[in-house]
Image (spheres, rainbow, N blue to C red):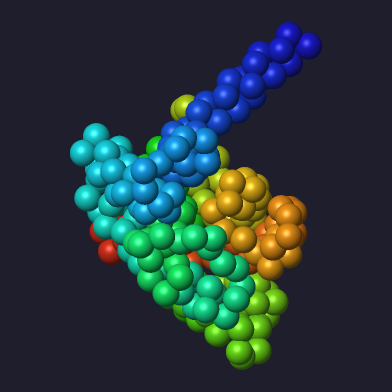
Length: 263
């Protein structure tokens, strides 16, 4: 009876520590969303998306020069930006969504700023890796990377070829079965199935996507007349795309020969 209050206090303290670390990991994403929100409130002398593109570059440089992201992390974030822009170019072309008044800093109807929203995901994964001291157990880098490539290719081609994301979801669960993420909060080491972390991150990204579309960042066809919540089916799309994001970051850690626990 005496230990229960202490145990409860420890659990609460750990949750607070974990929440704080997650908030720090999301700093880049929060900055991007905050800029998006401010652009709807503050009068701007230039097109909104052009201003946001400049803002995104400034935030990226700030995080680099302040030492919050190292050179490798910044390179990974820029790679995310390019991968995201490639994805956007295809999806906007086939009408999956569109950008209202994209401005001058635009490629085929896609504002350059759009890449920063994908960069925000990359920044989160990189920063979480450092802050939570992430390690992987039972990770199959080649098999997981092949599934990630197939997921990205399927999202690019699903507009005119057969969409096999359901089969890829099953395959992803298969190749990550037995893969665990080890992370540290305070002085305690925890572990979680990798696929569970994908789903949890996808939930938060779905919430962020609802906020972003509400702020007019982009418009889905069902939101053309008035804003409506993003379909729940996007949760599974985000879970699959998180696999792509994770592999991009993990491959860098693997190349730098970080230890991979066996158990």
